[in-house]
Image (cartoon, rainbow, N blue to C red; front, side, top):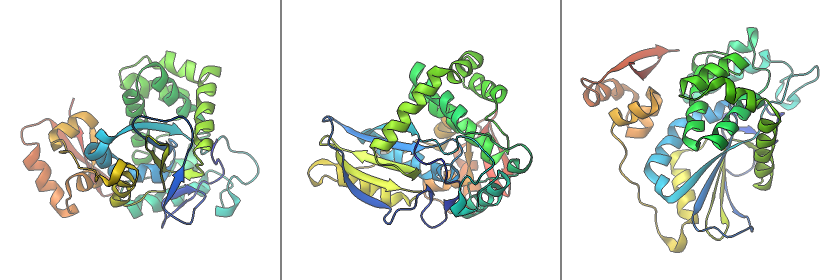
Length: 311
């Protein structure tokens, strides 16, 4: 487990956990040599700044994903609530202390977060959904695991659902086309615990202390560590840092909005703005032009528009 006691994320650095002095630092991980660049994304299902990073991270993967293998690593933000302070440095002693912070992150980043579930139906631990993620990743694929994580975060942050409960996780897993009851049962067993603790060990070995952290490592096991939710240019600069021989990374073409919506199922305005270099005021007209005749529906939460695929 990386750091279970930092429930408040810093607004300036975008870090959930220990705030380090620099947003990007050169690191050296001398282990077995690799043939390709590996990107490790250390995160947690209930990390608010990880939710805020989604627009930037998606664009980075779409434009530069051909340079690296993407690995999602669970870090362990909240093991459980107890009678003592969870994060005394940030005034977090009980679930209700998280609500205002979450709402602030949502307003600051425009990835909507309601957060009132912390008053009446709080998440008791981020470990169970992390274990479900790990079982899907191990038994099925990274893509399916990341799809589950995305659906989980949508329901938790934007739609204010405590989706970490057993029955709700079964529904989510069923919703991504897998056998929910079997997967959740295995995830909540010793199998899921073991898989999750393997990720904790990996995160410690990578020197991760907060979320989100992205580490890019080249074939010489040297690279960069980028801590917090940072501007897009930081991730491109990090990639260029680890490429061999001063070669500058070249972005590939992004998918059309119709293709992206069909793949993602739901996109918020901020995600479309970041992906297609748009001002907020231009999004509506852009969507109407790009998805004309397609089966999409526009909705709104907390004043933020989002588009969903119509079944």
